[in-house]
Image 1 (cartoon, protein in one colour):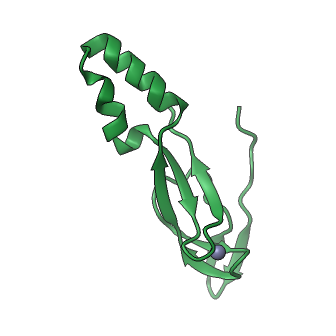
Image 2 (image 1 turned 180 degrees about the horizontal axis):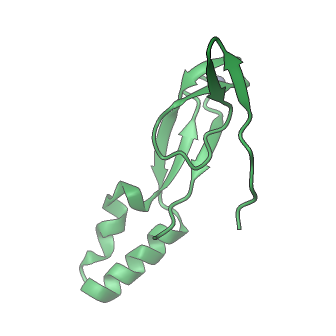
Length: 97
Ligand SMILES: [Zn+2]
């Protein structure tokens, strides 16, 4: 489904920083193309398709458990942003195991 994207890495000092944070679920350092510097990403959780599907499954199974995926961060998509320019730098969609 998702196309394979190879994150570029930029050398700064001795460390390599990614320019995109796709499939990263935790806040991490990256090199922002727009700000031309290393930033610590901001993360945001949003309700994705699978969150809704999960919700439906929980509803069927437990009747009252349908709200669990909405309260549960691992069941949501993660979006990574640059804290300075608010550019979206990556996305990690939630998929059930
Ligand atoms: Zn930036």
